[in-house]
Image (tube, rainbow, N blue to C red; front, side, top):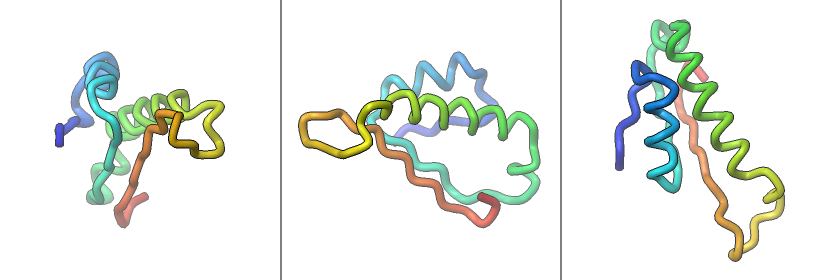
Length: 75
């Protein structure tokens, strides 16, 4: 497990995303979810996951599917 802070720059987040094979976004408080930097970091991660899974609508074992799990009261 590698922690990725929403306070990291988009470039740092993208670098870390290339080193992991899945992402889990845990629950957080309303203060974090309403934070502009948190929103930007979440957007960066979501775009990376979306781009990684383009053309892989149907999961096949031969594809490298990039999973994302989001859990929290604010999302």
